[in-house]
Image (cartoon, rainbow, N blue to C red; front, side):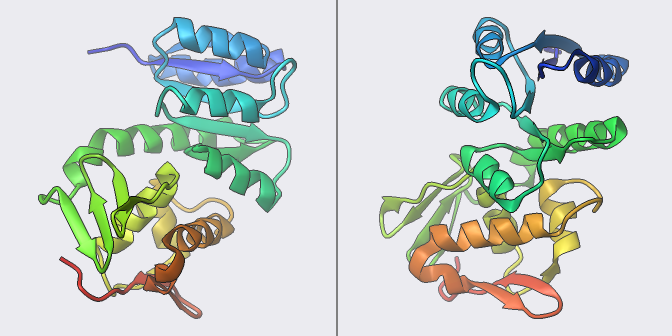
Length: 231
């Protein structure tokens, strides 16, 4: 079995040590980085399986580090931020992060989210439909390639937008609450802010453009996917 190595990036030694302690107890390896430049150097020179990345870093901030990593790899990334504004979350997800934690955070909750992301990654292939593609109107989802095509043109989406679309697509006309979507798509029991779901629904609708009405809001309950011509 290949070893699992975490890259923990934070300029505060105390935070790195706490995260490292919990990860080592799970039997994983940890490499530490103290600034953005250090993080990119270690990411490029080691086989990194998972990144825990602070936003406020010397030399290069976490946004730039995330962008550079995403240009080369789909390795899971959890972003650590001192602020919880929707803009920060939205920007992080647009860059392709898998999750975020607002400081101060519970190390046990961080570990739970790490395990959920890892489990989801392991099960991703087995959870896909037997067919390689699915269609609705002019939309085609290629499950093997994790890509979306609209009217023959690639439709770029963040990893979480794609996961949310596929889950709703695979359960057409069924209404899911925000808590259910957090559990099923994010992979952990509901702990924090359900607005995370609303943010991603907004992003997904923007990506679907003229087909945005396929993501239906059921007031007081949640969301469902409803489109004609599904195959």
